[in-house]
Image (cartoon, rainbow, N blue to C red; front, side):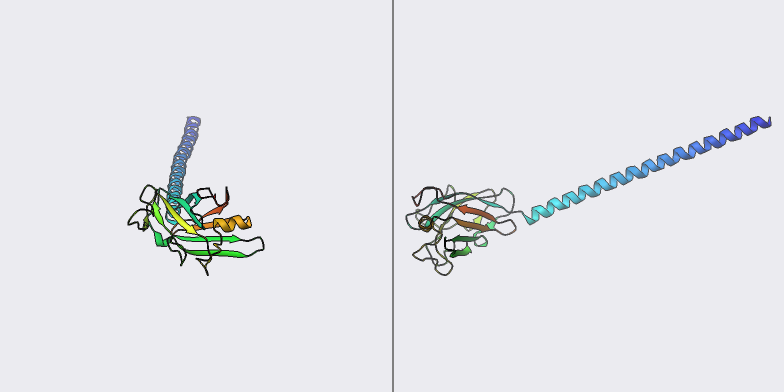
Length: 210
């Protein structure tokens, strides 16, 4: 009788221990599951915040998609396309920088808001498909819409002499010296874009320069 009682006590103790271990495993599983869910939610939130930061910091974008010799002087015609996402951008908030370097190291540049000739030949800006500068009553576009494409013109020259006869960095100047030029467009709330300008067929009107 005493042996049976001892066996029963041992079995009860083993069963109680197994129950405690089982309950502990359930609690541990619950803690692990909660931790995994919590970490997953935090990672998802961090990813969403990062994506929002990137969208906010680089909401606007623009690419130069075409460039041609525009006339028999030093004017050039460009096509640019804005990204589908982002906000409308005022024309005067888009800055252009045109540079080139002659073989002897002489460096030329000019920079201003798009549409501002700085005293050189007029700079025209219009939406692709709309009336061009040869149309009566033409006026420059004042705002750029996301996803839209626009034409704009630039002429050669320097910051000190934008209407100079040498037309620095324009097609005739590039052709004479056998050099290339660089064009940057800087836009607010977005990355800048850069394009190397290289003549494809001398200074012939309509020939590509990218």
